[in-house]
Length: 234
Image (cartoon, rainbow, N blue to C red; front, side):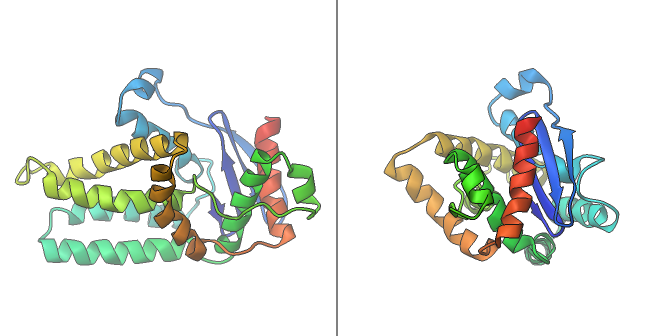
């Protein structure tokens, strides 16, 4: 996860945040109740929550005003779902644009590319060569959250159209978590797949990464490598 001032690398046990100006912190990753990891859809929500630990934890990388912005972005779309459709759509689009601008501000685009490069370097066993700039692994990642978002949009739209209780008062509250859970299940299946269908489903997200990443400098890549090394050491 790239932020304007650093990069977070998250594993199932630990997550680390390396700052652009130096310094690296390591934290424990929340796990959730073990039985929840065996319940379809619910386990997807748990895994999504784990991946967002740097943003959601009390000692995470989001502080002060950023926490207010994040809370607003999470609450407003749910409330807007109960408003007239035209107003709900306008609020949803406005919040999406504002959220993208908030997430990708400053050096985030370059650090996002650095984050992907560090992960690719770990998978290629080329961490040292990447640190010294002898090799430059790809800045595009099949497991990027951009890919998840590209899948989430059509899943949410489809579920909203086939929802079997369209007039239910709680429908807007149920569609959102169900969409997130189902998308995570689909995303996990894609990560395990290797066939042409898998590659086809990744195309929209990989294409979007041309907008959400930029070619990082060696210094920016080293920020990501520091976070990655801290997680591996822990």
